[in-house]
Image (cartoon, rainbow, N blue to C red; front, side, top):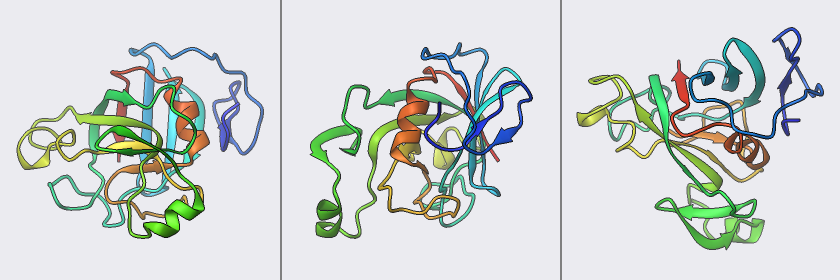
Amino acid sequence: MPPSGTADRRSGTAVADASIEHSQEALAPARARIEISLAHQQLRLRDGGLLLAQFPVSTGAHGPGERNGSGGTPRGHHRIRVKVGGGCPTGAVFRGRRWTGEVYSERLGRMQPGRDWILSRLLWLSGLEPGRNRYGCVDTLRRYIYIHGCPDSEPMGVPRSHGCVRMRNADVMWLFDRVPVGCRVIID
């Protein structure tokens, strides 16, 4: 069962904290799809047309934005280009897509209060639409836009990130184990 918000597999409708049977294996790339709603601050995982799970997220504090330096979350069609963090502990701290060897704690957070924490797992996105979110000054991959974990003290459901899609650590770890590299990600 996903750690937070879930879906009723029979009807495909969202049901908070409902039990749901899930395969422990990754979904097929051709069928798996992640949908991220900027307006609702939610991430939905689908297998074909079936809604498997949904989670609260936190996207760019500056709203939508594709340009380098905008601080906005890029819209449009993307795919997961790289998965980073498999096998690392919950709360593993990443810098430059590498585990620093640290595990996040409140103490560590107090020592570096302004740091944008990238924790547990990250799914690095690549845009699929040339001129909108790929190539030049609008390239999602070159902007280092990820779906990643963050301190559990950070609020979900409100835009507060620097452009990435933040999730609870347990949620991003659950998602990481089920989505393949190449999985389509639609952000609107």
